[in-house]
Image (cartoon, rainbow, N blue to C red; front, side, top):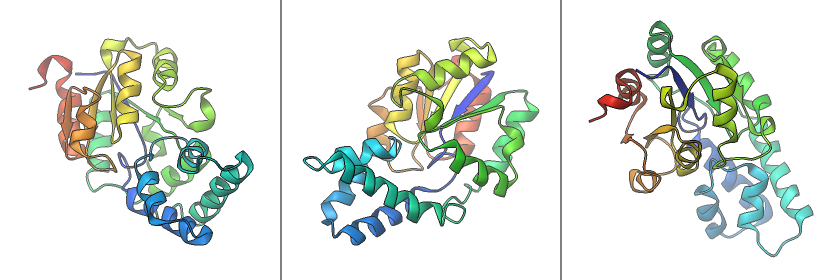
Length: 221
């Protein structure tokens, strides 16, 4: 059994991917971007927003890229609670992990100031001993800083920790930190993309991820 579970937020704990894509289309319509921009943009969920707009808008000014990111935040923040419904098995998983004395944390590319209100709305903030958002690190996913800081904060060894995420950026972050990872195909990246980051397993739900967390690294089939 692992002692520390480090979860991504969007697409892992909450079913936010459809809402995120909806806001992307809203921004694209506002700026009259072609559909190809959104198709590219969708693949970048899990990357910090300002990096996303820089990637999808090459050849444009930094000022414009930041303007687009700010417009996304404006649209998203007005609907953030409704855009982050929990996955059906979330409460059962959190309660089971807590009863097993497994420490639960979050490492997300979303700002903590956006995550916290959602956790409070769902009344689950008490399950998490640490929440690291985009503003909590200097280097974002797939850089291992968030994982390494979490390990240090909890005085936990790499062997006792596991990262659970729905994007290859989450899994590569774990690999770069020397920590096991479990991919969950509940977000924007399918199993094929997730397997490229060599997690210990790719599963289709939090229920399946829970079993792997409880079993630990030596009992993965």
